[in-house]
Image (cartoon, rainbow, N blue to C red):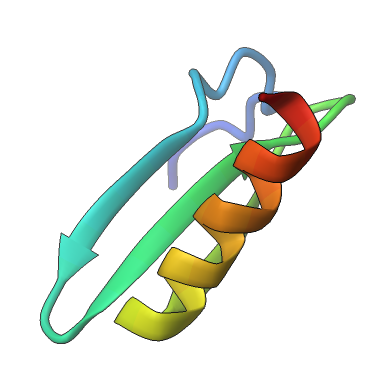
Amino acid sequence: MAAMKPRTGDGPLECTKEGRGYVMRVPLEGGGRLVVELNAEEAKNLGEALLAVFA
């Protein structure tokens, strides 16, 4: 059995197209990741909301 290691440095935010949807992986403080699956409309709405806040 493999040794358990602490989950740190899980990498950058990433979003990939998988099948009909998109999978977004967000690194969390303290290790680990939040994984969210979105359909195309939800991804578009999220993108617009983020642009409205940060643009």
